[in-house]
Image (cartoon, rainbow, N blue to C red; front, side, top):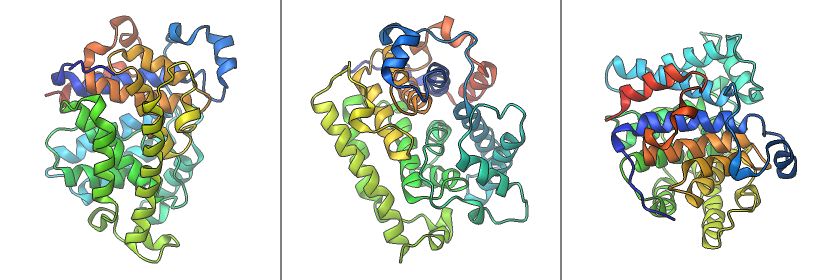
Length: 341
């Protein structure tokens, strides 16, 4: 694994463009096994960006969160009340949009429909039993926005998840994903990242964020808020063990899903996206292609891989010919450039 240091001044743009490129590259390969992908796309190291480069609900919801977060931060210090309203509105607008036709996840659809009732408390709309990857594949803006304290970043990452995915593992994986994006944007070396994530998970294992989540935990079967939150962090620590094992004996030619999971659930999407990035930390296109040529949730895995690679290497990671034709390019650039240092 290399140690190239990217342009931290463009980490936000690099991360958001990388996320969308991974999404577009993985869109045609989702639901296919690796032999079928190779038959359709040719050698995985030569996969071409589709033309047109359409994205999925992963990028659409990332932009929805980014817009809501930007609105909240423009209104003053980021607080739970200040974040919840605009993000909720953006999620509902996405649900109602005619462009919401990219095979979105059922959890997001159910939760956003419930959130559309303006009189309904958000916690009663949250799908408490779902730890699908739909919450952490969109969380990168929380990691990229400047000026947030670690506690604000953690709370905001968990709250944006809880609006749709209330399972404690979805909350923990979203928190960890935002932390990883921020760490890379701040200059953490890729080789350090698994250890940093493990230390962060241990430090927060029993930290229920009541200030951001209220009494969400009471809708679960857990006896206490501590047991609720620990259950999620323990799932994440378990998959980090699998990530460490995969990195100890790396096999770039093997399907990453065989090592760290198919990515349909939050902790596995995080670990498999990280694995693809960490196999090729200085080769961002190779990392994206590896992520897109997987037997699991290829678009979400590649989304996360692109977010990590772009946060690490900056906007220059992505060739102009690819970045220039990604769907939603103008909005991705506007959001990224507003948050670049």
